[in-house]
Image 1 (cartoon, helix red, strand yellow):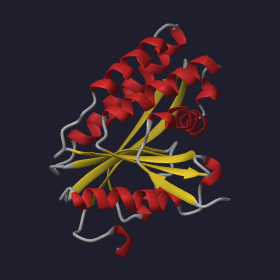
Image 2 (cartoon, rainbow, N blue to C red; image 1 turned 30 degrees about the vertical axis):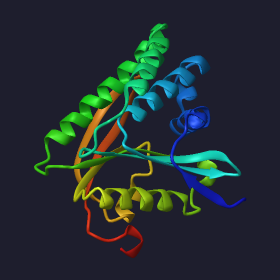
Image 3 (cartoon, rainbow, N blue to C red; image 1 turned 120 degrees about the vertical axis):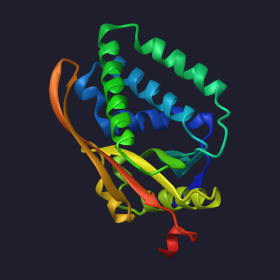
Image 4 (cartoon, rainbow, N blue to C red; image 1 turned 90 degrees about the vertical axis):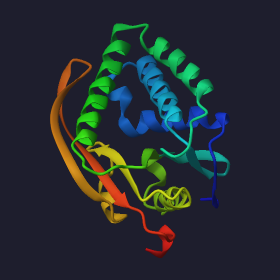
Length: 215
């Protein structure tokens, strides 16, 4: 493996990162290949709206992971991203299967809102998206991406941030970064007409005034 490098997101990263979403969440196991690609594209477009910080991990110039953060102190410059997201959602909505796929994520958003509304903390930021290609996990790449995000939160003077996750993700990673699970929601959702059980979580962290690597 070549040396891993890191930099902010650029538009040329989009397809590789959308592919990572498709692989990581197994969209093609539940949907047709066309819907799976459109769903991954739409999801990534929407994530890009809700970010003020990005770091992409690259192996030999190819994106293999990304982390996004959202500082509530910083205005979003996201008109371009919003227009792109609308187009991606329109493409997804062209088929009944695509509309079912998006309805699933609308239900997930409602669960997230419920989890967040149950917290007494006044959060200042969010870890809004985090994904690494399965072939590159366990190599410290996620830890380095998280360190860079953590330091961004620190530089923004953000004392408290949160992240949503669930049992389809490596939620134990957040516990290893000293984040605290502060809410759980167990639900059964329809995934392309098939009922599946999920556990959704919200984790929070009180940011201290030092680098994550010194924790």
